[in-house]
Image 1 (cartoon, helix red, strand yellow):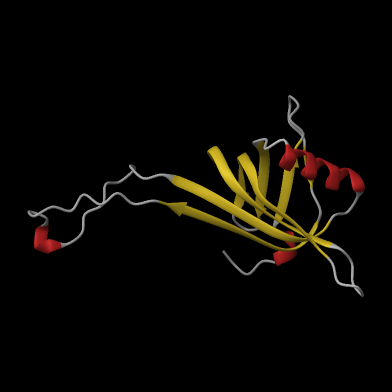
Image 2 (cartoon, rainbow, N blue to C red; image 1 turned 30 degrees about the vertical axis):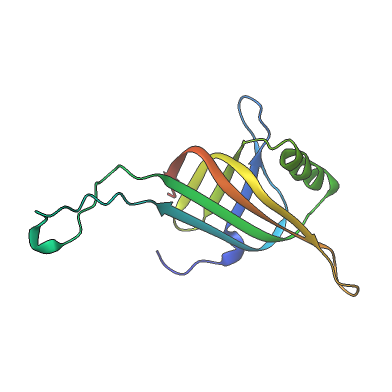
Length: 139
């Protein structure tokens, strides 16, 4: 994957309708996606050379997403705030340029607001996967 513009990594929230429509939730300046897989150690006294053995496909997988920036409009701010206070697992899309789209249910784990007296108000959020995710390769 060649170098890509960080601003092209997008975070979109689904509207919950059928078919689902996704919209960008804000002008995020920083965004990150972390994919994790828990390992299950099955090493035993007979493991070759005492090397650790891992059981493939047995661990829990999860995705974490975080972002910080500004809301682009009141509707986006209200939607995210409503999803947080409802503690609702909603469909989100994370579009990674040159890689693809990850889509699935996420819960908002953190929703923060900040502001300095001589700057704009900003927000940050953290999402945790809440079910199976799908991946669609770019191209």
